[in-house]
Image 1 (cartoon, one colour):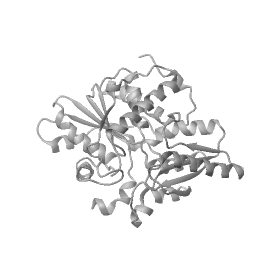
Image 2: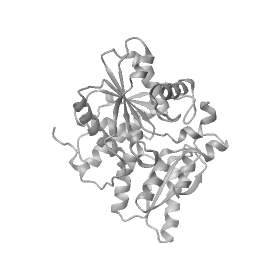
Image 3: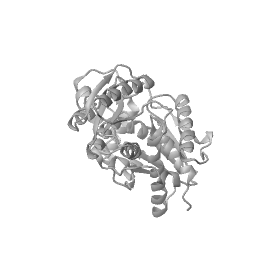
Image 4: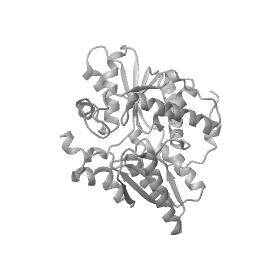
Length: 340
């Protein structure tokens, strides 16, 4: 197959993760569902290796590739208190000999000590990151401006900072990691002689969802790609994914292979909102652990697995569905009281 991603392969990148990640069948979940169940598979991006792994490892290879090419020595990033992205940014910075400043935004209204100090927060501190706080949870532009102020202070101290932006409108370097993942999936399905009718992935910042969809369509895959909403409803998230795909095309100087009809969002398991459990998500987490030994988190993968279990009922028995396991394992420890 001709490589449509010459521009991508020429961009700066640092290798941080283990790839390819496994692609496995979930036979116990199939049996637990009963009746004529489609084939259920999982792409184990929780096994990318760095500091508990996860999808952000793939994204950071391009962000920090640019940072290294620019000679930066300090990484700045914003995320929710239990953000997987900031934990992995701190780990990647440590591997590359950089400092890391993390800005934790108040996205989830929780003050319990377990949430505030365990899980990813514990790892942020263990990894040596400097923590800052931002009082708003729905002000992406404001959070980026505040990071810019911190970066200016670091410049005055002689540092060379690099900001991983939170708000949309910036070159979507993180999405490129999931174009790489799309190539990986295409190679694995060819080797395993299987075809997927639907792929489900958590859709939050949108970089993973958009990059995966863009990569699959550019490589000729026509399977349905469904984003399970984790932060905003389907209508708003659709606009975000559409914008990301346009930006990816500009970044790679190629035609956008994603049509509007390709952008599919499912917000059935979003309520009551980001970072909060509902019955469907809690059930998906427990069932996955007890049937497959898969550890899912309440914010992202629990929601995407809940969507898998629900949407599997709409597929025929001879069809196949793939879950992208985007990681998030450490967050489970911050939600122990909720889960038990």
